[in-house]
Each structure stands twice: as C-alpha cells, then as structure tokens.
Image 1 (spheres, helix red, strand yellow):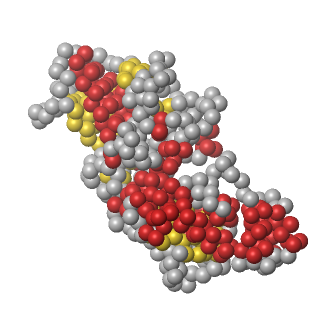
Image 2: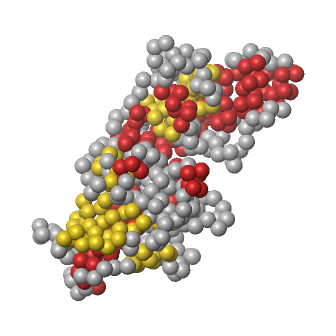
Image 3: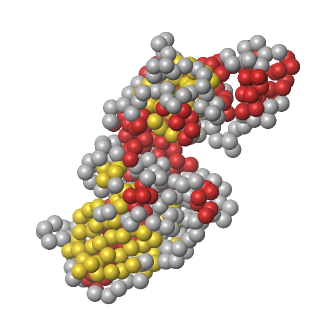
Length: 446
C-alpha cells in the first residue's frame, strides 16, 4: 500500500502496536489535483488544544502549511459510519451527521452520505473520505459500515470485512492472517464510537454488536497501492492512528517503506532491493531473480531503509537508482530529497578526474546543469568507469552509516540511466551481485 502509505515508531504510542503498521496509499500529485471534493465530507470542529502532544510523529506536518487542509483517515470514517449505523439501528431514525472523538485529541463531525436499512436487523451507513490536501488514493472513497446486534452472546464490537476491504494473507503487517485489514487504532475508535451510541440510548456500553466494513470500488483502489505486495488482498486497508491525515507527510512515506521491509523480513526474505523510484526498480527486476516482495521503493529514505534492514536481520540490501540520487548517497547523504541537497557536479567532476578526465572535461562537468547532463558528458568522453566508482562509494558510505552494524549487511549498488542501461555496479561482497544469467553492464533487454 504506498499507502497513511509508518515509520517505526509508528502511529500510536512510541514503538506502537504492530497492528498500526499498515499505511494509507498515495496517488500522484497530478492525479490529485484533478480531484474535486465531494459533498457530504467531514467538517472538523474548531475545538483543539494546541498544547496537546500528538499521538505520534505521524501526526506532525512535514511540509510548510501554506494553507493546506488536513483530512481524515479511513479509520475515522469507519468509526463515524459505525456510530451512525448503530444510532439508526437503535432509534429507528435516519442519521444525517455524527461526531466522534479522534485520537489526536479533538472532535470531528462527519456528514453521513448514506443511511439505509438492509433489513429489520441491519443498518448500513457510509461516510465519504476526505483526505484534505493529501494525495491519497482513498480520497473520495465511500467507507460503508453495516451494524447489527451480535446474537452470539459476545460483548463489545466484533468487526468483519466486506467487499472492498483487504484480507491479510501474510504475516508481518501486525494483523492476524485471515483477518480484515483494519489496524489497531481504527478498531478501538469503532468500538468506542459504537459503545457511545449504545450508551446514549440507555444500553450497557458493552452491548454486543457486529460491524461489517465495506468499500465500493475498494478492490480497484487497492490496485494503485502496494497492498498485494504486502499480502493484503481484495481491497484497501482501514488505517490511521491519530484520525487525521496530514498533507504530504514524509513520516507516513517513511513508515510505508519500513512496513515493506518488515513484511519481507517476516516472510523470510534475506535479500531486499531498495530502489529510489519506480523506473529503477523496473530496471533492476531484469537483472535480479527475486520475488516481488523483495522490491522496496525506498524513495528518498535509503539510509533509514538500510538501518531497518539491519534491525530486521536482512542479510543483503541492493541500492538501485540513477546518477542523481546515487551521487548524493556517494557523498554520504542518505535522505535524498531534492529540497534537502542538490546534485553536486563539482563532486562528480572530481570522480571523473580519478577516472582520467581532462581538466577541460572536468570543467564542463562542473558546469553541467543536472546529473543527467553529467552522465551524458561522461559517456561522450568514454569515462564509463566513473559509474562503477560512484557505486563503490555508495557501498562504502553505506557501511559508514551503519557503523558497528556494517558487517551484518551485504550492500550492493546498481546505477541505471533513464533508458534502462546498467551503467555500473558494486558490492561489499567479494562475490559481487548475484545477477541473472546473461546480465552485464550495458543495454538491458526485456
């Protein structure tokens, strides 16, 4: 699920429950800008204690506010829909809006999109998810909850999954295999909201109810996430630890990377590929014979990903990327966001000098407008050895980053160009990288 995309510690208390490890899916900014808000979305109340400590780093905004709207998690929407359905079931009257308390420490009022009686004993209510100004693929999704009394004699709330909600099929997500993909905090929020509704109608707060969550189009939405790679099949996950979605949260992005590593490690994979982007991952697949779960889109978080691999006792990690990101890593910068540091063409020119570049070519490289421009100059002057050298430096800097843990992880690096050519590679293993038969530096063939 690149999913509300979870650093560890993740949402919830520090080093929170494993059941909060799934994260909300993201979509591209371009697609996001085309989205328009639908009627009937949640409106947050203005009651907020600015001194309250957020439930976790996940709730902290990681970009300048600039008027960006916060939104609500799928977990908050499910809790609101569950409360509305319970009230309608007990009162026999349709519910138009409902207020719940968020783990973030404030209340939020949600408009009920649909309130329908399935039969005499079941009511379905839905809420449209408003992700605010975050590029989240679940934005606009209808979160439906059907509530009925529990006739088995159990107390409290029993949660089941319906169409469009994923089922966990592999260990490592923090949710039992076979259960619907609903994490710990949303489960708690739903139980508390249903209990409040029961109490408001004079019932014991532990009265037994069953809540089935479903998401129309959830299975299609899930195709835009990494759910399947994590073993969550058939739909999206119901997530969130604070109840609130912060726009463009890099903490959530980093958390999703950590989750992918955790799931892979839990399922016994010892060799992971840490790509800087989708294209470099695609190119790497043509050279490495590894299962789908082994490929982790680390993005700008190569350093945190390496440390996570060590923590999870992964034996081998292969960096894959292009010249721009890898050049930063070769300098020891392992959080490679463009806003944090730019490509240093002077550094790249110094590498070329070690490979025999003339003073004139070095100066041309220093004046290069981009990493790609540097690459083109190097290729035009037959300085191809600069790319393996850069890969070697990435491996060396990775070991420095890991410090005393460096010997516990074999580190590889593979550098590609924009067309899929493998420009160079290096490894801390004397045996090199276990490439597939016929793979070598040069043009890739499908």
